Image (cartoon, rainbow, N blue to C red; front, side):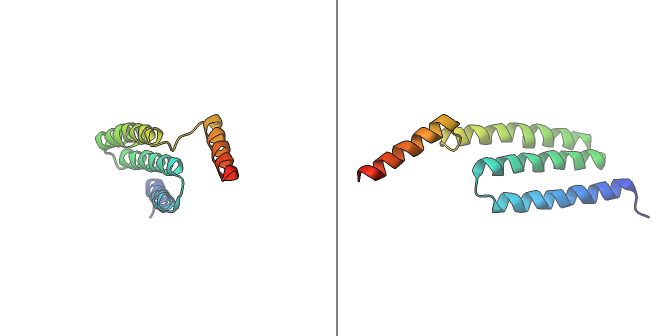
Length: 101
């Protein structure tokens, strides 16, 4: 007989597969980082469910915490994270360059 814990693990595994496919298909780097963070959080929940709290804590701290922060810093440094004003200004400048040519 299938108990509730087994059903929960299967649902979470399905979500992990969905996250992995979504991260591969996604074109936006920010979206991919957020999907990766979700993947790590779900993985830490799975570690808790299968009674491995030490791995759950490590996964939550490193996978969803530190790694995500490092990804955000990297995206900011390479210019992928723009505020609305900066992006609009950049788009306007590019538009003016094309009109002048």
